[in-house]
Each structure stands twice: as structure tokens, then as C-alpha cells.
Length: 116
Image 1 (tube, rainbow, N blue to C red):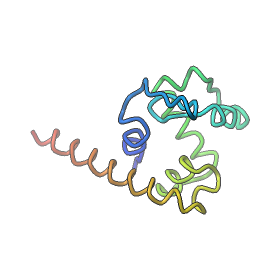
Image 2: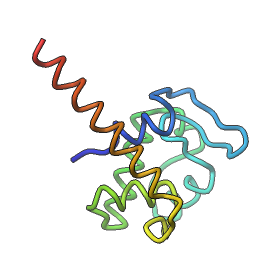
Image 3: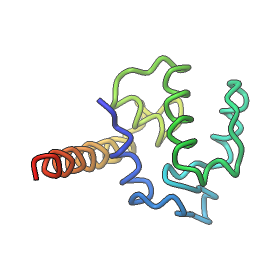
């Protein structure tokens, strides 16, 4: 199951140009500079400017999940939101619920469109 549609909806409402100045979070997945540094530390070719490219941002998300050996969608979402210890943070539970809901809505819309 891909949770990317739900993550993108929760993070930016699908807006690749979204920017949160308070956190310096940019793009469809609201990637902050600390995530860019972590990606580079892990050997992933990703720059601050790449945050504005939704395709590259999704590739980054997938690469991090593979490197971290995360296969559980809840762990993927909660660690994306709360960092490496996201599963231990109560604050990420609401985030996970929002991602699940957004992902379900996306799947329903996709299914409806394919049946029209």
C-alpha cells in the first residue's frame, strides 16, 4: 500500500509550491533542511532545491524507507512526521490517523474516476 498520496495531502494539500517559513519546510512533502542533511548523510543525492520537485521528494521518501527497512505504513508515516523515534511519540498518532483518512479518500476518488 502506498501512503504517499495521504502524506502529500496532509503535508501540503498536494501543493508542490507549499512553504512553511516557521520550519523552512518546502514542497509537496514539506521537507526540512534537517531531512536533506540526513538524506545526504545516508548517501542519497538530494538538495534543498529538490524539495520543490514532487517526484524527487517522493523518491527521497521511498529511499529513506528502504534504507531504514521500514515496511509498515504506520511506521513510515509516523517517523516521517516525528523523526526516527516517531513511533514512540504520542504526537504522531493524530498525524497517522490524518494520513490514513487522506489516503482512503484518495483511493476512493481514484476508484470512482476509473469507474466513470
